[in-house]
Length: 597
Ligand code: GCU
Image (cartoon, rainbow, N blue to C red; front, side, top):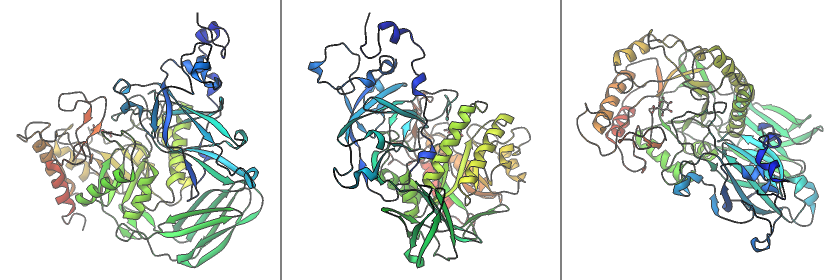
């Protein structure tokens, strides 16, 4: 029977099914977030040691605590060596690293050495070292030099770990365990229509911060008030933070006490809009710390059934997008994002629905610059466990991390708190908590969700519509539902007095499969559905926005018929992100028509 020097005798690690109990807390949450704000980071991208661990042997045998030795110097047998073995690039999704890992769902270990990035001499004692993980799907556990530091839940938002206390100069060993197991109590739950990529799929870096530093800065234009600045700092003493916005000739002190401060400035900044994406340099300085952001000032409001941007009614000419790539999975890049924006522009879009989870922070940063509006969303999708308190805490934290990460981004028009969720009391309570949290963290943006419509009454009676400011509905008349008359009835009977956005519509079509419009999965069949849909939606006064499903074909394990073979084929373009289908031009023509004029 095997013996593990680290985990005691064989019985200890083979028969103890409580082995994970020691690795469930503390939790890294939005409370430990630190705004980057242009501060230097040490990029930890590159090759990391990597091993899958489907039976959690690394935990059972406590291999995470193995001392570093050259392989030839090891004397006791072991199943995995955190200091040796295969490597994968970070960021990446393990599914695409090896064919045998394509559908792997479970835990895996990432490991590398890191050097204390603080200068060897000088004020190192006053500086803090914070690990920033851009995203890890789904659950990440962080170890430094074999010591467990904590756990993060949520596959698409950043988390932060203060390493200062354990990083006393020199070289250290960083270990991150990531597991992507789908579970009914997670967010999303165990059943989705997108691929369950696993791994460290966004950048990992170290931030060096002054001991006293700015942890968050939220600056926005609030109607009736002016420019409102919230500053959060690491120390609770009474002090002042200097805030400068040169374009507004603003150079002011924001008093902080108890770790936070707010100031309101009566300014009239040049406004941001998709047509004029004006960004202002904003700088906050506190002691040795400087945070810089480029911020677009604009006002958003919902007035009856209209969405107002800077006081003017909006028509959202959108398209839905997943964060998915044939070669890189969930890993994106500026080039990938800018290509997505170019294709959206070719459609005539001013709006992107970022489905169904927080996309990379670069999307909103670049949308600020290029002038696109965004629907940002947390993956409260389908049958989430609306009763489980842990599930609710997980969802609340993912929402908080998304809002705090992106609330300075002018391009983010709305926070979506759900997609196609069942209208039950438990779900209503769950989403009421999410809506309250979003409004607490952000006093400027309307909330939305993809709500349900009642197939019998052909009305939107979903109680979720009462929680949000913009009502979204996903409808697939012509594809899943045959009768377009039902769509016409839903739109004609719409009486909620709020803006209505068609957050999904569309159909599968295989690029290159040509034939009769009567044959499903042909491009002609898909285009004919767009023709009928757009003719109806274009005539419905209630519809203030459309984001058809979707720009590119994307991976999904559940779609296995011969036309799909692991891909959802509703993209207006194929997964090569080059081949356009007939329906692409149908939508482009509609958006260039006088719809909404
Ligand atoms: C749903 C869901 C999408 C899904 C789409 C489809 O509306 O929101 O995530 O991919 O339908 O069936 O293709």
